[in-house]
Image 1 (cartoon, rainbow, N blue to C red):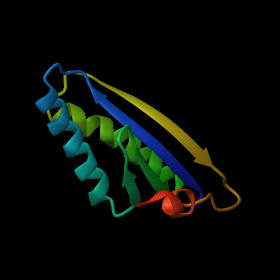
Image 2 (tube, rainbow, N blue to C red):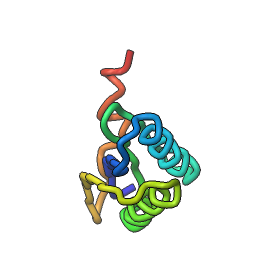
Image 3 (cartoon, one colour):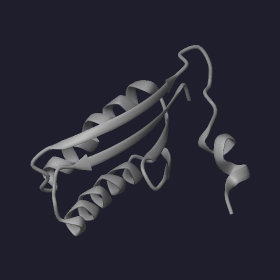
Image 4 (cartoon, one colour):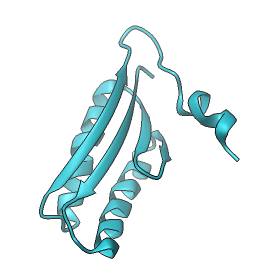
Length: 98
C-alpha cells in the first residue's frame, strides 16, 4: 500500500436531505471497492495503491453527478510514497477510537 487519501465530496445542492443522500451513495461506492476506508465527519480516508485511489477519486465525483448533483466539489489530500508503505488508517487513528 503506497498511498492514502482523504476525500470530501460536496454536491452542489441546497436541500440537506438531498446532500446526505448523495454523499451516502458516494460512501456506498467507496465501500464497494473493497479498499480499507474510514468515514469521518468531514471526509473519508481510503488507503491502497496510488493509481487505484486516483480512479476512486474520479469515480466518486461521477457517482455524485449520477445521483443527481448538478455539480460537485471534491477536496482531496494525498499521501504517496512510491518506494515504501504509508502509515495505515489504523496506525494513525486506533489509539483515539472509543
